[in-house]
Length: 147
Image (cartoon, rainbow, N blue to C red; front, side):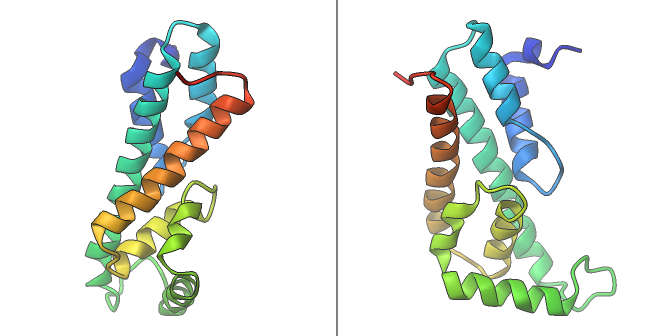
């Protein structure tokens, strides 16, 4: 199936999945959709950003839920790894969420923000800046002007 044929909903879903702990890629899809000339760049930016922020918010919510179960045998992260992640997050503070767009470290950052009970309002502001900024820079670098 041609994912571009799914249009904006396909991009939203790809961006949402890309922001969770699941492996997915939304940047290439965004660029492919822009290259077709069939989609409005501003709406693509909005769609990808909303999906990506929602995916990060799912991670935050999972972190809030998982924090209550740290001692459980099934808990997916060792206590040592949790302490290390918490120490790093506290050292760099909530502003580290501006790095939530980065591959590999971005998704765990949003999860640990939930574990450490970062207020959702601050979380959303910082993550939205990061996610919109990443897609906007990507679009600008590839010559797509956002009106």
